[in-house]
Image (cartoon, rainbow, N blue to C red; front, side, top):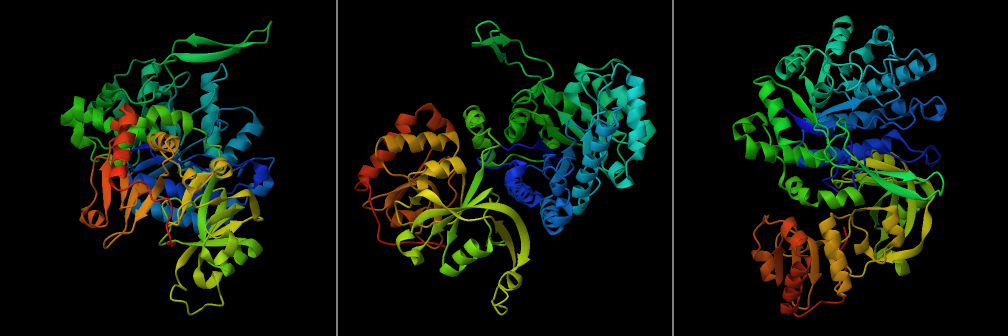
Length: 579
């Protein structure tokens, strides 16, 4: 039994579900695929094995007004296969949900054609990724148009007109207003499309009063042998709605408070909804997509709630959330405000080690990242370049930025044919295709000569940063700590590599001192022996997320006490360490 979530990721700052740039900025499927690649790596580390991809993965691919985007799938065959291999290797089931404009019950020919083209594009993406029949495109019947029976007939007729490779990918979900489970079961008997059971929709629209267990098993029985059924788990929101209105006379805006709508999703799943679903499943197998505003965090919460309220059902979950995902949950309230802007443009800061690579990026418009040694996050809308000691007056700064046009897979020998005998000539690289390079309004310096590799950030942060440590995307906890230390004029290094002992150790935050230094990890779990760090004069402090949120001032004071014990802050160093 796999459990998963849809589209947005909240447990890791900076992950975007697809290339959200507008058409004038030339978004591309290969950029979306790299965002998906980063998400897959996060899901694997978080022990989540089901994910609904964004239907916008290939921007404008079927839009009738933008034919220049219609060839993206053919242009991205190698990259689609690469990400598909990654998903299969991680055993992560990938699915789509058709976007709202897909309405097969419509009697409008233009809308039908747009719907058909969109479904064909989504199916071609799944096929090009080499994904099995469990990777489905979930859709609703659509509008009833005051004649539900006629709408169902049109839906079935349009399904019959779809190419076979598209029909093979479809799965049908009942809704909460027009077509209930009995309706979609009738369509299944006419078309063979399997049914996705949705717990909340069944509770909101169930004209024949079919009991939950019976309804669930009726839907599961529609799936072909060898394909694990998919079900949706959601709880209704109980939060008040704040609605902004405008006074028609004065033009002034005001806010009104309204009761919740029963079909709106809650932030997290109510424990007894999850328990009811598991009890109704019995020994049957199914993959469960959690539909909640907490997304991946809500998946982790389900596991914790089952352990607490129904421990006998815990073995049915067959997984447990990672420690990192579980520790992210206390910051959810703060993150929803700060990290919800999927439109903010992402930047990846990369290292520029020599003049030749800089000339390639500037003049030929590409940069390479080795696939085998690539960081967890490589996707971005822009690359920014950290210049090493080879660059004279620009060394140890970030002075340049270039837009990302796409990502391609290529062997090193094809990128650099003048080096056919290089030891890594046959290794695969991500070739990041770039637009014109431009200079930043002001270079961003590295305050301390330290190890720098890849830094995922946003364009807004890049343009407003005073120094490199302002770039990192953090949880709200780290943001609060960073601001608190800054108020006390205490420079803090983020993601700092402490090069002591046989292997480097990375601290979430670090303050190099006259005598060693003080490192901070935002976890109560110690990840390795610390004897080597202590011999180098380093003291590691561990704080749980709850401890920081409960008493930020006390946390900061504990760190500063250790800094004083180590002789105070070391303001500069004399060595540079770069990858």
